[in-house]
Amino acid sequence: MNLILFDAPFETQRLEGSDPRAAHIFKVLRARVGTQVFIGFVNGLRARAAVTLVEADGAISLKIIGTEAAPRPLPIRLLLGLPRPHTAKRILFEAASMGVCDLHFVEAERGEPSYAQSSLWTTDEWKDRLRLGTEQSFGTHVPEVSMHTDLQSAISFLQGEGGGAHIVLDNYEAAGSLSQMLPDAAKSAVLALGPERGWSPSERDIFRKNGWKLAHLGAHVMRLETACTAAVAAVSARLEYWDSQTSTVL
Image 1 (spheres, rainbow, N blue to C red):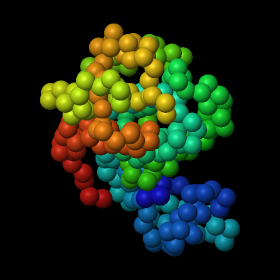
Image 2 (image 1 turned 90 degrees about the horizontal axis):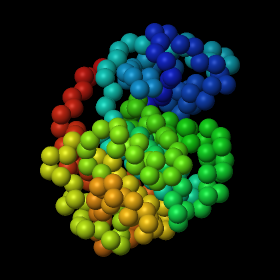
Image 3 (image 1 turned 180 degrees about the horizontal axis):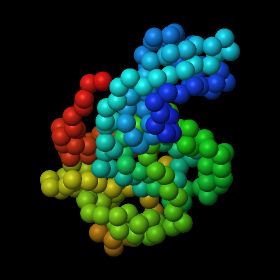
């Protein structure tokens, strides 16, 4: 991990030797008294902390010595047909590392209902994937995740949360490429990607009735996790979001 996340801000903090973060600081970062490490507070500031004490049992004490604003989340939201757990793990990690605003899952017609009962979703494993992705990205924004009962409910929720472009990625009935379907004036976007077998004809109709545009990412068929990453990267570049961000050196 490139940054270690904490749930709440602090000035000084003691980590027990059994805390995985203490083990990472000591064994991976090889930190000793005086070593500085990067940390962050969930959905808050990024900081540099100095190790002030290393105890015999592996416990470590930290003191904040500087803070700065963390990167803001991308104005991009994802609506996803619930994929198989292994794919979902990758998407959660990559979406968090890219800084998407939030993720919304729905059991699509061509998906497998049993996926929702996997240990990924019935335990905190999905939260761990988001946290790891955020730490990897050197950010602090941990995306929210929502499960919706049906596609129309998910669409209504997302459209009720504000404007922006609403685009469905589809290999079969797309009206044009993603770049063509994204309005030049767009400041935010919601991207919908189906499960591994794609959206059904009735689901495409639901999207169209709600004013969503169908787009493709090219002639090659991608794995769902690859398509998510490619789509987010392409849209964030078009939105020119990062050009407006500045950072203060710690």
